[in-house]
Image (cartoon, each protein chain N blue to C red):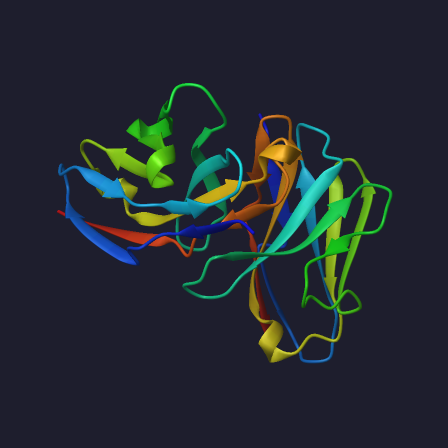
Amino acid sequence: GAVVSQHPSRVICKSGTSVKIECRSLDFQATTMFWYRQFPKQSLMLMATSNEGSKATYEQGVEKDKFLINHASLTLSTLTVTSAHPEDSSFYICSARAQAGQYFGPGTRLTVT
Amino acid sequence: AQSVTQPDIHITVSEGASLELRCNYSYGATPYLFWYVQSPGQGLQLLLKYFSGDTLVQGIKGFEAEFKRSQSSFNLRKPSVHWSDAAEYFCAVGDSTQGGSEKLVFGKGTKLTVNP
């Protein structure tokens, strides 16, 4: 149980375009999901907390207009990187909160060319 | 504010040897503590967690960790390392006032290399 999926696993996009990443809790409902960003050989940095049916809460320094988060259902949260630039290239990981803790998705590798 | 320190960036051990990965935390109250493992290009898998009770916690894959309040530590151990344990290991602290499953603060990770 407690499986979290992400789609796509890898994406390459051109600078200036937008990319949407999906995070799904497959066998449980998650009112809260989290989005993290991980640079090469670095730790995970929390970007935002996604709450079902309400606005996401962004961490300091994260541009909410650039990283749009939508949590429209109890099993799906999406992160859209708008007007992507090469510096947005990173590994994006989501997690979903369950009673026993957080369960992480496999991550999405975004490369912006 | 919470913080986590993993002093060792990279550790190399021989297969079959014992392992200890260090983790120190800073938190005002009793913390919720976690160890996660990440294989290259993958997400995080929970190895074990400490919320309360017995300070020696058993996890998956033969790992254990001991919470030592006096040392603000939560070191991860394994008596005999297997080649498949080679990965990146992250220690994390959660906010106990929020049930431990709210925001997690991660350490910078320790990369484990296992020599045959």
